[in-house]
Every structure is written in C-alpha cells, then in structure tokens.
Length: 207
Ligand SMILES: N[C@@H](CCC(=O)N[C@@H](CS)C(=O)NCC(=O)O)C(=O)O
Image: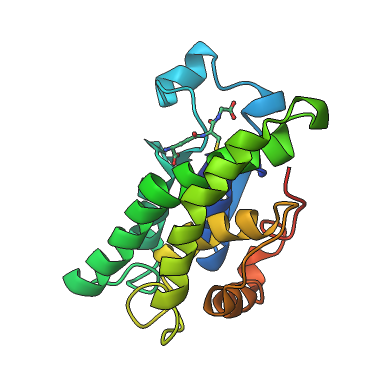
C-alpha cells in the first residue's frame, strides 16, 4: 500500500488525517504543502484538488480531499469498524459530531485563532477575537455538558469524532488567552493527549 498525504502539519485538517493514519498504524508519506510551503496552486495539485486546499491524499491512485471524508475513508478501509463503527446508529453519532466540528466549532473559533496566532500583534483586532470567543464558548459549554457522563464524544468508544473535535479543542486550549473552566472537556482532552498516535501531531507548537 502506498499512502501519500499533502499538507503542512500546523493545519488542523491535516492533523486530523495524520492522527487517524497513526491510530491505524498506516505507513504513509507526508508532503508539506500550503501556507509558506506553497505547492497547492500548481496545475498538478489543482488536478488532485480543484479547491487548492490541503489536505489531499493519494491512496494507491485513489485521490481524495476534504479532511473529514479522508478520515472516514481511512477508518473504513483500514479500521475494521474500530474508529468508525459499522452499526449505522453509532456511525451516525460520530458523523454528526464531525459535521458539528466542521460547520459549527471551527468557524466559530477561526477568527480568535487567526488573530492571536497568525496576525502580528500590532495588527490584531480584539473585536474579532471577542466575537469569536463569544461564538465559541457556548459550543464548548454544550460539549462540556455532553461529556459529563461520557468517555468519548460519540458512541461508547474512541472514534473519528474524537479526532475531529479533539484537534480543534487542542488548538482552542492552546490559544494565548484565558479559558473558561470546562472540566469534562479538559478531562477528555487530557486523555486524548495520552494516546501514542498524537505524538508529533498535537504535540507541536500551535502556529
Ligand atoms: N473543508 C476543508 C478545508 C480545507 C482548508 O481550509 N485547508 C486550509 C488549511 S486548514 C488550506 O488549504 N489553506 C490554504 C493553504 O494552506 O495554503 C477540509 O476539511 O479539508
């Protein structure tokens, strides 16, 4: 098997894919692309992903983009139901939280991240940070309540949903600003960070 992953490792969408590949024990090659590495607007790259975005994978000639679709594909082809349950209901539960990550949580926190990490101090707009925090905190309160009596985000096992939501929560907790107490999210997050597969992925500085 030959699996190639394009994307710089400080992208949460690439982190999800690499974390999943590591959970599954896959052998893969990662090629830095996007951001300062560039390479994602060339004709060859755009043939793989017309959006010019990272990540993209090539799995023995099968090319796929959209990080959550890639995560589910890898789990489906190499996970044997371990990361993405075969039973439709727990599977839908995991899918639901992945969609929540992509359509609710990530958009809410994006401005706080972009301002506090990717914008020079003199050019930061605190108003954007404040609005982003105001949008994100209710979502984290919801997640905290959800995790009160659970070990994992979906189903009753570690799934792709923990990976998708976990990468974003990791970034959120890494932002240099005060954080509200979210004891259940913090307990879950601390357990995620003990997984060997996060090494070299979520252990890197947030940039
Ligand atoms: N919905 C897409 C979003 C992909 C995306 O926005 N990728 C960003 C990095 S996180 C990107 O390619 N930015 C341009 C760049 O890095 O040059 C996914 O989940 O894969």
